[in-house]
Length: 131
Picture (spheres, helix red, strand yellow):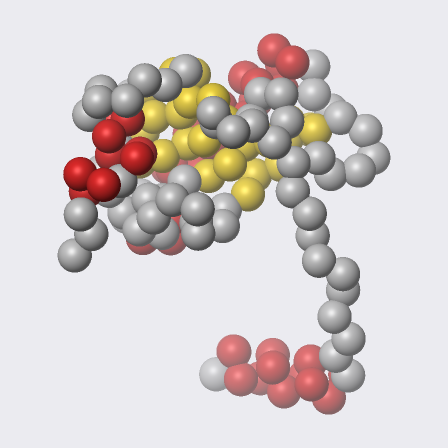
């Protein structure tokens, strides 16, 4: 069982820590990341504590809120596009990073180089996952 009093995002939801709110409704909260990777970097969280993004029962609704926040950031900051990122290892509370982007290269996060897999490995992996 997670100690919710130690969860920084639960503390924000309860009003025990300040935040720079961008959006709030009954179930979700979006705010600027206090350790931004790019200007306008936001976090969208469910107000109820869930460990992983995929644990949120209203998964589609959650992503629609992230899209709404992303579109508002994109329009306001005149970003070319928005990247959405879920990792979940920094804070043990479901959260979606919303990162506005400008130019041809990704800003705010890195993607590792492509790994090599043979066609046989790919076929076997696809077969294993689909079964």
